[in-house]
Length: 204
Image (tube, rainbow, N blue to C red; front, top):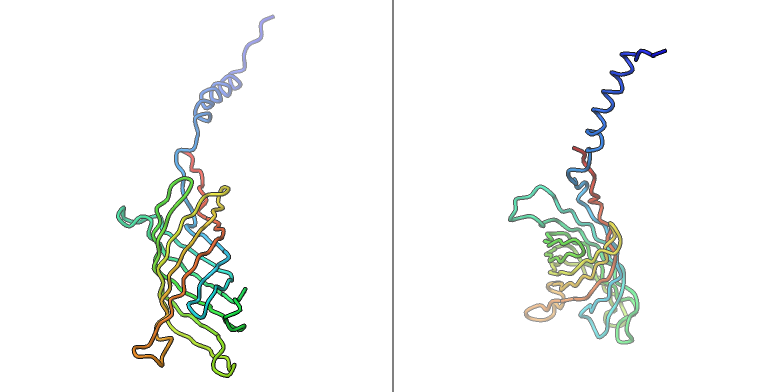
């Protein structure tokens, strides 16, 4: 006995067979970046430009680099930075020596798949504690500017290792001099940065 095919079943199978190639060809056609933000922390060693020796401490960074920029401005972003240096004084430095600063400004980076180099110019506010005459502690606050740069190397997925160098300018520190002398702290930071600009797949 010969069975007659059921028209509805045949139609359904036909539609599935036609749709399958289209489903199989759905593939990522583009990668879209989201949240152009990176946050990092590091350990710093600086010459405070006061007495002899270096002091150490921690540093935090937050970078924001917009995606939609004119070609000539691509790679330009903003950075906020905070640093607190109060560890590992040398014998010639007062035991209460401390420098901390918070700053923000522009950063420009050239990005490649495995590493990126950058330069920055920031301005902000700095504080310094140190021993004065007769052992009386002194607190000094000022606006400050800095220039710096460094390199980041991709360690794993969104994690980058950063090496950073800065040269700072703290004006009018030695007010009893004419003209008033300035401090120029400088140093390096080694740390890690997590890049939140995760690439999201977008289907055709």
